[in-house]
Image 1 (cartoon, rainbow, N blue to C red):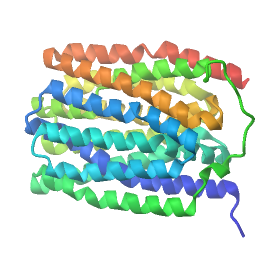
Image 2: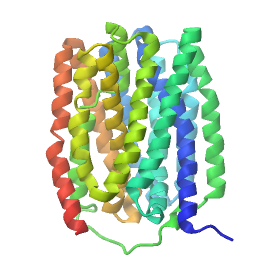
Image 3: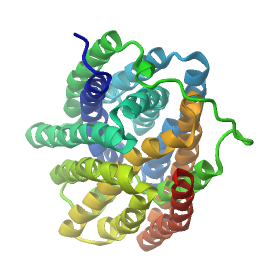
Length: 393
């Protein structure tokens, strides 16, 4: 007897979530230690900020291309598979880097792989979310599994560094979860060849400008948040430079951040299904405090700031696909994800470069810009929330 569609959809989400667990174990484990690694290879604070921003810019900006390609071809699985393979190969290859520019290239390539695979994967999850009865719960559950992989990856890196004190050994060890990711990807492709079948065809909705105005308002708010979010390699670079967090403890701080993001994704995903975008208002105001804590405080402040950083990052990344899905018709969804994340990534690139440059000039200036940019997003999120509520009513 065939399982009900809702149960099959849940199994699909869980399988993709486990795959994302190992994927995040791999690349978030690398991100937890790559800041100090770049510093040891001779990179400056400005270089770390630019490399981080360039990677995120590529990682988000290229989703515009993969999103449109997925919508036009409906090749959701092939495009996602290419992205996963590129990403999972580039991370262990960091063990072979001998200069910081070489490591920087691999970091950007890893983000490119993530850019290719995310829009089609999110569209497949959104189809399952329709069957499960809640986009927030679907993407929150997936993000939680994703983030818990991001907890264990940094912890594994911390254990390796504590034992060997060798970054190359740590990066090489990440080949194991990378291979597990690709194995689960193969299983998911075989068991669920057409996830779009979870969602019945909906009447086509045509907007004058292609996408609704609420989409662009929400994008403006999310872009301001991303511009103010200092990437973790710069945060870890600061820990190494100032000694506020001992080297061995840096991956632990990142693991705490990822745990906060995973738990927050579950809770805020459920809340999103009930109250909509309003859930982001207190979260955005609270998470803006991460910058003064991690850059201006001592060890305990850095840990608290890292938790706020992870909470904001995890929840925003799970709410973005959940919020965009009901804004646009299914046949435009991958394109919408691509456009949204392209703007998000461009803002990340510019913001990271600016914050990294200001960091080298004066840490307080970098902190002030980070906080102001994030708080400036609140009016846009309020307006987007009101429009979504009025349209739902």
